[in-house]
Amino acid sequence: MRRLLILALLCAGCGGSPQSTAPTEPPPVAVSQAVVQAGQLPEYLELTGHLRSLDRAEISSKISGRVDAVRVREGDRVTAGMPLVVLDARDLNAQVVQASAQIEVASASLKESQTSVGLTSADVSTALRNAQQGVIQAEAEEAKARADLADARLNLEREKSLFKQDAVPKIQVEQAELRARLAERTVESARASVKVARQQVELARANQSRQQLSLDQVGGARAGVTAAQAGLNTALVMQEYAVLSSPIDGYVIQRAVEPGQIVGPGDPPLLTVVDNSRLELLASAPESFAAFFKPGMAAEVTTDLYPERKFSGRIRQLVPSADPSTHAVKLRLEVSDRGRLFDGTYVKARLKVRNHVGLLVPRLAVQRRKDEVYVMLVEGDKARKQTVKVAFEGPTQAIVTEGLKSGAAVVTAGSEGLTDGQKIKVESQ
Image 1 (cartoon, rainbow, N blue to C red):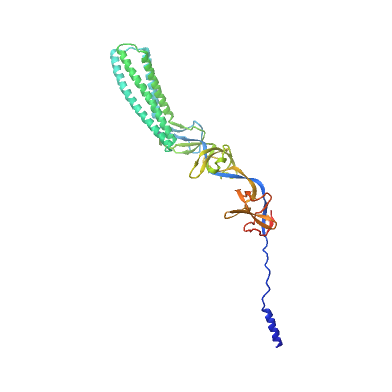
Image 2 (cartoon, rainbow, N blue to C red; image 1 turned 120 degrees about the horizontal axis):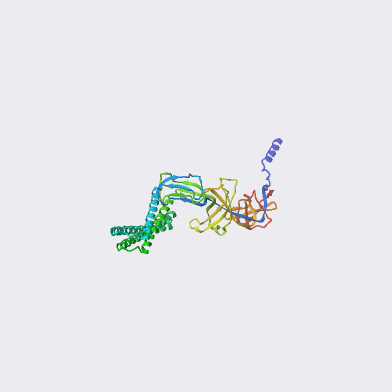
């Protein structure tokens, strides 16, 4: 009985509640810190695009004709004045020969008038009829030339209007101007021919009365020589157009013509020649940076063609216009090179636009939560939250203008998730 009582007491002692333990404090968070110092941080702007040669020539034909020969291929080096494309010039050569013969005839007529050679009555009557017929023919040719000139001038005005609307390339305006000038020369030549024909009539009538040639008639003969010379000059110009030469030194980068092809004014360029010694990057930049761009401003240019090389560039021009839809302005940067870069190369240009001054803080220290920007200060063994104003952020550092003082220590690595007043342990600077 006594033994049972002892066991009951022991069991009652075992069934009691266990002793409660006191709560433990969480261990400090391991962090790194950095000391805030005054300084400045440069802001860079990166622009991209393709290089374009500043000296570029697109070779087109000013006359219609069949291509006789193409003397270059893409990649060939050419020099200024070098013939590149030759057209079939047989008709043009014949026109030169004909114009030269007309000069000889006009010169002979002048010589005859100057020597005052007399003629028989029959010869004079025949000469008068021929001269009168010549006036009719010359006046008809002058009327046609004037009509052609009016058409050429109307076409020129139309091409100028379309060019102002960016509807046609500039070469079409130049070709229209050329046709107008040629039409003017034709009118002048026809007018001179009419004058000569009329003077020939006067000469024939004067011969009917067996009078000597007057000084005015001699002047008419001289006008005939002048008209013939103008015709020869026109034929020589057209003959020159049969040979298409390069206006610059450079390389052929595009060829769109083959022997036997029919070409003419208004066709796409037959050849494109560029000089890669002077290259330009035309790039777009945010209009908010426009005030910082100045002619001569330096740029660092890189390309994937030469990953280890850096090329120098400078702002050549800021185009004084902004795109209202993209709010961007255009910059022209001239890129210096020693023969490695070329037309069409894709490049990146890095410009230093300004320096931001303030307190330098590692970017890792800057935290954001909703609209709040803050850092965690190191105060003894605790972290203290401090709201700051960040003026600019670079790749690794930020500029803070409000909320900190120089010399303050901020948490860098390990700041994520820290709360105000939480214990920390600084393990590295």
